[in-house]
Image (cartoon, rainbow, N blue to C red):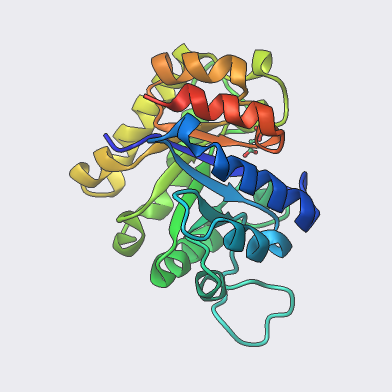
Length: 251
Ligand code: PGA
């Protein structure tokens, strides 16, 4: 399996160019502490250029938090995959539950995946149920979200899946998913991926966990949860927490 991957989803936590620059420059200077771990920093759109510049020539990559379904034209306020590529962005988060909550849907996410792939970006597709059901109905939710991959050959090459149970997002490590439950879900995701895409490709896709990943739980989630890394929200905007998470991911 590939290197571990950790994606910092800064959401709207870090908003000033000064803070963003200081964060990534310091991270870069300390990168020996987490050598071998692939790291992506996804700031808010207005900070992308600052982050791209501060990371130039580094192994740490810049990512966007969202992308438009449109590629060009009269679409006020949208940001296209090609414009992200032009400024040096390499990754993009797609279908985050906070975008779903704003009305975006699977049909749009499928187009976004295609746009990202056409532009040469690595798409990080977020999936996850809003609640767990005793009868296992949450697995149907995951299956439906993954079904958008059916026939999407172009987006598969670089695809990353981030499994983020919505009920665990923005809480604390004690409320995050337990490693045992995560293992079951990761196995289910791999099996389902193989229903929609080539089995060999399905085995290669990194699966990240997100939802209150913090320094205190990432070790167990990695060891027992069978994930390839994390999509980190609040803890990625606090420098010390983020460094600890990265160190825990070092093999
Ligand atoms: P959290 O967010 O780590 O703050 O729970 C994760 C995410 O929403 O990507």
